Length: 540
Image (cartoon, rainbow, N blue to C red; front, side, top):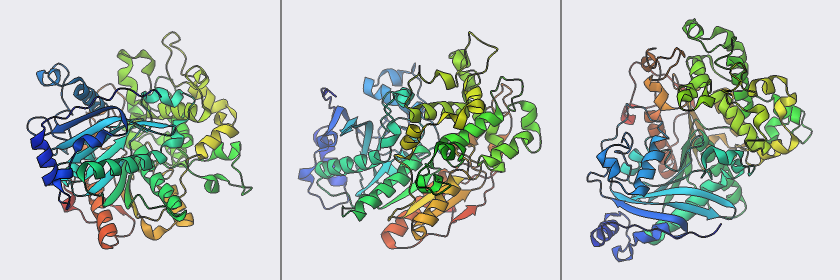
């Protein structure tokens, strides 16, 4: 890639440099402090100090709900306006969580390139840095600001530096249909972030990073798992450890050869991969077929099916076999139709939900297909042919082994989870997760750790009544697909996980830094009508 001109913006000057050096609790020499070094190694770099005085601080808390027509938005620099868009495109937090503390510090952004791996990154270092670093994975196909509301505010308030990337999806979902198989790098990209950020902070602050923790939601949870697994392999080869521990929030599980090789012949056949349920794509495929396209006559995504007891009764057998808990049924119609409300502006999104979209995009990624090559199993509606459901459904129902090939299986195995790590890892998962089914993702990973890894270094806390993303727990969605949003009363039936994740992180740091092992793995009983938002109130 041709090197692009770097843009470096440093606001404040001498006062910021003074604060930057003196605010660090480490024994560094403030004369060595040089925040401009935070952008070294980045293309298209941009550096800014946020004072917290009317600018939302380093966590950008004023950006979450800012409108583009507001004077506040119009007065922002173009780089800051871009951050507003990225943050708002990734809203995942419950509205119950509104951080009050504004943190001052520096943020460096740009493109980090390591060998063939390229990702946009965001590195935040608070003025009151505590000497530690969080390396965050990114959920879904999100950008480098995807964790802005769920992880960044409370971590910065406690003094942690923070770095995250976009997993190489600089062009969004189109990179998944590029034929370049970006998922193969998602694990090692966490190591890239850690090494780069550690060096940048050391040079900028004149002090060493003393602890590095990995953390992430969904695909970011997968990245956390995989980062610790890769680090374990590296340490076994005689290299220095990178990560001291990790928090996996509802992580995706990519099973490896040992798990998928059902006949123990030393290889994973197309048939074995095509019938396995504890893989990301296959168990979502089952949900896609079970719930059906939302505009088909036989779809189960209807208000009447939602209103029955249990909800969607005709789906329970198939969804259960696919790895979804009965508790997750409240979300089945919602996840099957989530993007349908976009159809006015984007007609091809009619009937689109997470299930069919994940099935299509990840299948294309593993098969190495571009948009044209993947038309045979596209999930998108054709407005020119309104009587036909998207081709994905007939593909899944009729293709041999769901169309998988030996080559695509090798790409799926390229960065699969091993369950082997040598630094403490805590998983926090939702029992009612309807995207990454509890029995298809959380349970199989725990089984892999117990069979192949060191279970003494692992805990899994399962939160009752909790789904995949906390924003859904506010109950504002169209759960029964009747065209009206938020009238189903779901807010009092669903539990956000934020406080539980924060409490789990405290268990982790106490485990790593003081040797105090946390409570055993368990299911945490919750009262969804009385959500806990303060981690200080929790003890598992």
